[in-house]
Structures are given as structure tokens and as C-alpha cells.
Length: 273
Image (cartoon, rainbow, N blue to C red; front, side, top):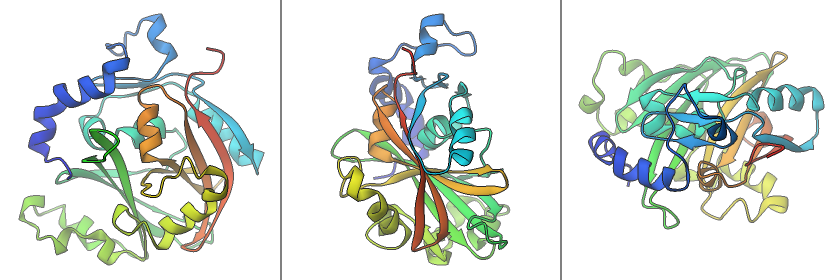
């Protein structure tokens, strides 16, 4: 089940502080001890990503991969409560100064981000929505941060309704972006569509990374006027919050059925540590 906002507040100390920081030192940002700067750290109030966390293992286009690696290897501090409770992996591990200009709104039990961008780099702007939430009940761990990505040829009615109507007053159909979306990367339809094509693209080499029930965390970065999907497996990157290695893939998106690998990065302990 997806945790309610009330449950998230009640469990911030018991769930995030215990489950996430069991193997991490508690930090106080922005004053960090020198030793704490070597690893990812998360508390109930802040997430910290150290410098040089990533290295490239595949570069199909170095003119794209180089700037992305340089950006992701900058230290990052996340202190936004919505990010900590709903989109920690997407904001902390995938956060970048190259990311598109997301607008964020609370979305009931989650957060909803919006950006109008030329995702396919074909001159046609699309309305892209990223939903971030904390999912409970995965058999491998107590919680898991996940994203749904919805791509629409027009602004979402759901997004516009959030401006004047409390989320709690909307019906289930009025909060269903997948019903509006032209393309979705969604935990509910992972067996088809964009989710399946990304899965099939990466499966031959990364079968152990992309489990059968794989869900993703996503960001979108802009490099030299072109936009690229940044994707990581939700379960594996959840381990990344605990300091374990994880993979990040930079993908070129042309259509629902046409995605290609541009870069593969490996995150984990900072280089040289």
C-alpha cells in the first residue's frame, strides 16, 4: 500500500530514521563532519549526496555523458519535506543542476512534478508529469521510493484541478493521470508500453538489476539543448540510499517504442574512497 500523509509523519522517525539510517551516521546539515562527506546520508530532515559518487561504465555519446557525470558528481543536499517523504531517490540520487525546471505540487499521498519540454527532441513540446511516492509492502524491504512518469500532448486536467481544489475533494478518476496520458512509465502497467521498452532495452545486459517486478525512479536532464531520461531501478537505488552500488541509465527518448541507451553510470562509494 502507499502510505498516507498522516502515516508518513507518524513513521518518519521509526521508518526513515531506522530503516534508512541504520547503516548511516546521523548528520546535521549544512555543517557536516569531514568523515560524513564520503557517503550518502539520510535523516528524517535531510538527505546528503557526496561528491564523486558516480563513474561511467558505458558512454555512447561522451558529449552528453560528460556533462551529466560532472553534474551528478557534485555534492547535493535535499531538505524539502516533500522530497524526503515522497521522492527521496529521484531528488537525492538523480538530482542535477541540468534537470528540467520541474514545478511541484503536493498530490495527496505523493508529490506531482510538471515540466513542458521537448522530450523527443523533435521540436514538439510535451507536458511531462512525474509522480513520486513512498510505496510500502514490497517483499524485499519495508518501503521503496518510486516514480510514475506520464507524457501528455496537452496540459493535464488533474494538474490544473490541483490549483483550486483540495486533493481530498477529487474523485479517483479525477486524480488518474494514466487515463489522460499518451505514454506512461507506471508501476501499474509495467508489462507494456514505455516501461516494457525500457525494460527490454536493458534486460540483455542487466537482468539481475532489472527484476521482473521492476519499478523506476526518473529524472529528465537537458544537455546542449537536448533532453534525456535518467532512470534507475527503484529497488536497487533504494539500496543506494544505504550506500550500496546501483546503476543509473541515461536514455534517449524518441517515442513510446523507441528508446536507446546513451550512458550507463554506476553509483556507490565515491571514487577514490
